[in-house]
Image 1 (cartoon, rainbow, N blue to C red):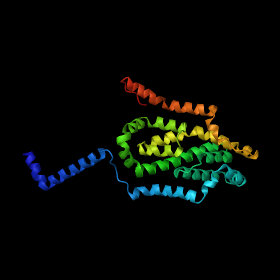
Image 2: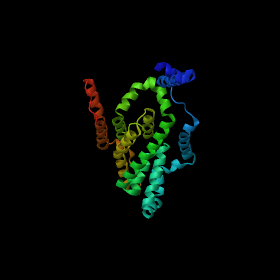
Image 3: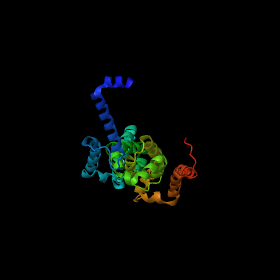
Image 4: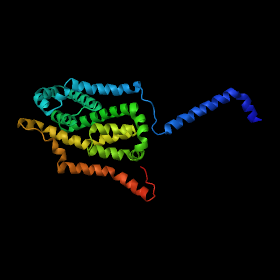
Length: 277
């Protein structure tokens, strides 16, 4: 009786509508689960990416790359130091804005800009400025690319990279921290790849913020002594990062960052569930 009443209440039209809605939901779920599919890339979603690309093109078209050199820093050192002396806080803000923008549009020359920070502000202030600015710029790039292309690219490459994606995301913080500490790959590449692997924003920001501190401190230190190097008519040794006394401690930190991954794999191999926390 209740079933009959229910049928009488809804009527054939409403029942057909419910069936159609259920079918549509199932179709969307099936499409999402089908390899090689994903959200369509629209012009509206691509606009922020195009803005970043336009910024990169304009950077080279206007010849601004000529200013991201040690020679440009040498030629303009007096004017830059005078500006920092007169407008300390403002100079720091301008420096961070330029640095963050450069990272967001993938401008090369991060090492020189970090050295310039050490030269102008000293090691400690430069490290703080660079870490904040680089993290901000990298996060802007990550968010824009992930929103515009992340889901689509991830869906298309999942049939080939599915296991790698799952493994990376399971221990995303450790992997990202290790990549940031031991800069084997270009900074811009490490900024982009996590966006295609579905890494969480909080994980990305934390690993970036912590992981770039050691190398930043080293190059800011080189920049802090840049005045004496330039006065002597010499050029700074950018290969200092590859010196054993510098490289080995950083490599050690990168290995330490992967210890949680090794521990969890060891536990899984023994059939034990690793504790989270």
